Length: 461
Picture 1 (cartoon, rainbow, N blue to C red):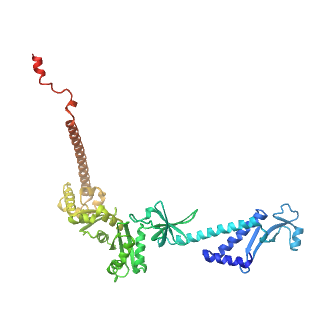
Picture 2 (picture 1 turned 90 degrees about the vertical axis):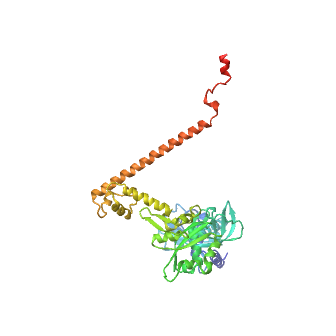
Picture 3 (picture 1 turned 45 degrees about the vertical axis):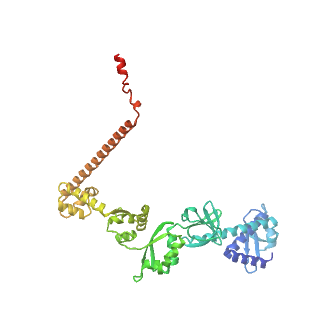
């Protein structure tokens, strides 16, 4: 192989594999160095350089100039060194140029193997570097094979894995050669090369689909705030905008629903609710629970929980089939949601208010004040420090302690009564259970029964 041919091969490999030219040249130099070590010894006193202009490979074997040679592989006598370079001196290193073509078949084969391996490593690193920065993007692949439910897709230069756990339920991907879209959720380097993990169930897949369909999202005018999904069944997505003249929900729906329908079609019929985001958590959760109407929202910011009151006839609508609607709404807003119908809520308010009136020293005025401040029952009072009650206008420290102690005694008595009632119910249940078992037993199992009527006259006779 002449020098110009070597240059052409390097150029072709760089084009075909997309490798950096400098990386390939370094690999070539290391391969020649490895071949030189194999032929001349394992010492590391070789230097290889590739001249990119001429395509020539220069190999130098460096030896130390000494008075008396004890190791020919690493040393050269001063007399021999003077013949090669008259200015040589003791202690210096002299580079002897070697003919790379004389390395032999085994050395050349070793160089070839190193080059091939380094090319594979470089290509693998190149693919990994490309896809690790594309996590969160949608890719199109061709189904290559299905292995134990896992799908291997051909992305062109590499393969990707769509695990069974990341596939939408009830979807079937058994046709080799079909195209499939999925989201890159991970890219890692393993011994076999880069492994790219895909998903069709990830919430970001839905967000990425909308970004691809809605120009306002890709341009940053409309922003997706949160996504909650139960893949293959239903999803909720909240959106907002930086432009007050644009309806973010309408932008995502599109003309006659064209944009959202494209996403639904990709997800094989998954129902999608698009709601407007609001910084007001009450308005936000009311939109998230649509189509059910919300009458009232009671917030507990410390516990990040919401008590949502809905009309009696819309309780099942708010909760959804198997609790799906409220479950998705809870994930979307990031708060725990407890849905109650209006009748139950009014009953709980009445019971809680009555428990305040039962406390010694608490009249209607004080009960109203406590109720308005969020203390809806005697139990609510026991969950705060008495000092917090004394901060209420018109409530002294002594009265605060009195109210708190009374509430504590009331709650403890109520808990004790509930426990005693539970014990009584358990005993009654056990008694009637045993009685039922005795009544169901056959007569012979009850001991000696009455004697036959004929026995009496026979004994009398």
